[in-house]
Image 1: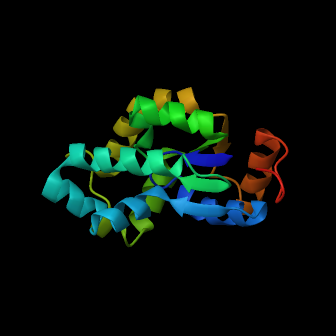
Image 2 (image 1 turned 30 degrees about the vertical axis):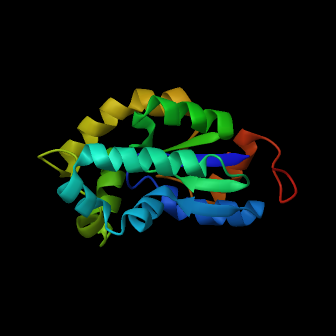
Length: 177
């Protein structure tokens, strides 16, 4: 079984994956880190050198590979849900948890992340809050389509989110999987 964390950039997927996996006795992986490792460069550099289509192809392959694992918590990239096959595989692999947060919280988290400018490209010409609102509006139906449950990461602690996730996805323990 796999638990996949989905949501917009800054929603807390990377911060939650490790503690959730530790609680379950599983492993955790950040799909964006895996993409960068395989490509040998940052996501921003992939966008510049190869374009978004190449990045999405790498993202698709990484997600496909990860979703064939077991006892894994995946922090999916914010745009991983753009691929219909990936959405289908996420749902088939196990619970999909959509982490949400208010646009102001997302903007503050993204702005406060020192690695954002070097690792993550803007997805629109405007960037910032306007980009978050626009891209989030486009992606919400896709997040909703594959989510088993939705957790508001803007108002809960990591421990509270883990408790909510475990309650929502059913009985999982160190021995389950």
